[in-house]
Length: 382
Image (cartoon, rainbow, N blue to C red; front, side):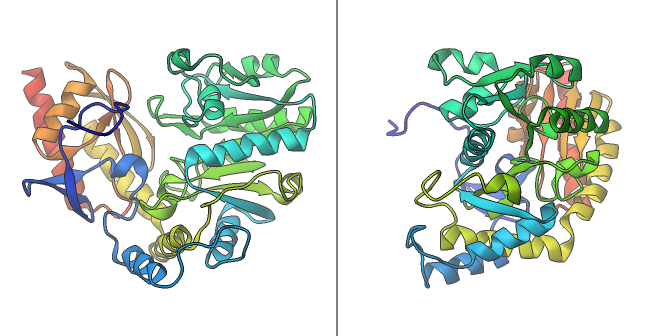
């Protein structure tokens, strides 16, 4: 019997310990983690710098609420602003969905009454709250929760003409991912993002970029949008920011952020000292080791190894966020067999696997993962 709601399938394994790129289950069996808690533990499990920061914060100050100032939240905000490009402000939340909720509310406040619609793409994923669920371009996920909040429209991925036609006087913003992660690991491309930027400038819209999964070095740049040569008006981030500790953030250009005044938006826990300490330590390590460079180099190494496997039809993505199209078997069956062989990955479509290892992954660990995947695919083909 379980006392947990049935919102997830019964787990095939229970993990009790992690270190670096590895996890251990209740029986002491070791697994190579190439999913990183859905692109969260980008510095690997139990990173000593993050663990030390958490221990220090737990023994100093955990919470006072946002009615008072605390540290190191403002320092983390300053670092995020610098990495994004400066001249912005940050709101801290507890997750990516909450960061996107903040972005949606900010867009409405900035645009004013009558302009409330947010355009997003089919195949996208922006969260599980009612608003971010409707922003998510996956109608099958909507049906059980209808009616969803008004103010969201979807267009085909990378269809700039469809996007232009969808812009009516009610539209306030466009919300896109640089790489559609849950949708199958599909990169946007420079021409598309640059066309969206021009459209937003022409129609006085906010270009909001969801970097929840792609941000903080995962793609081989600090931010996915940097591959495409544009500057967004709003950027949301979470997942890797705390290396496993729940924290999210919404950054906006100062002129846009000024639309919010005290009382417009709030959170009890967002940016509290424990989570902010984890983020501060995570960002410090990321900058010290230059994780974008590591993701770029290790990502190319992993891509080359995967592409050489006979049952791999295609490899797509950026840096260390890769989608692997397999032949001869369903992706879910491959995931199950990989788990049996000690490799953690997941399926994002019927035929595609998602790989998102730690950004500190070694070439030896990549060799080990590809060897396991190769054996599984060879067995499935046979």
